[in-house]
Structures are given as structure tokens and as C-alpha cells.
Length: 149
Image (cartoon, rainbow, N blue to C red):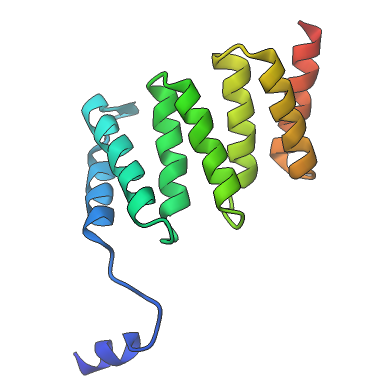
């Protein structure tokens, strides 16, 4: 026991919060085969949002917001999903999925909202802000496809 206490003294490790434990529990129950349980999806949407709001400095906060955006898309709440993706992108400059957030926001504007002007602008931003990424390549392809239609 003394060894465990010694190992964690002075380090930045903190035990997971009750909210994070609840998220992990819900995630473990979320799928039946490949299908997301709607009831769990709704609960996770709320839990992810609450976690990101109350523990914004926690390393999991941007991931929680990203996962919430995915659930919002699945629920057909496209405007909220775009807003969530932009908040993650703009609010967490060190988040490793920033380029994906930017691309997904553009994709939702394009495919789900059918807003050609917003999609074009968003795809162009992906290319400018995240050059040399897979998402920039996908944005270029998406712009080319839009110009064919």
C-alpha cells in the first residue's frame, strides 16, 4: 500500500470522476451487435455534454465533445453537431482530431444540411488549416465532387 501511495504522490494522475466512470459504464452497454441502443445514445449525449461543460480542462473533454457530435449526427441533429464539432476544433488546439472535426463539420453541411455555400467554405477551411492531412485530401475530393453536380 505504501508503494502505491508513493508512486502517485506528486504526480498529476487523478482518479476518474464519477461522471467519467458513468460514461465508461454507458459506453460498455451502448451497442447490441453493431447497433447503438437509442436509450443509451441519448444518455451518452447528455453525459458527454455535461462532462465537457463541468470538466472542460480534463484531457477527455474534447473527446467527449467529439463523441457527442457523432451521436448528434446519428440522431439527425445536424446543426447542433456542426456547432459541437466547431467548438471542439476551435476550443482545443492540441486535440489530435481537430482536422477530422473540421472535415466532419463541412461534410454535415454538405451531405445532411445540403448547404452548398457553407460546405464549400468549410471544405476550403479544412484545406487551409490542415494541409497535408487525409482530411484536406478528402475536402479537396468533396469540393471536386460538388463542382461536378
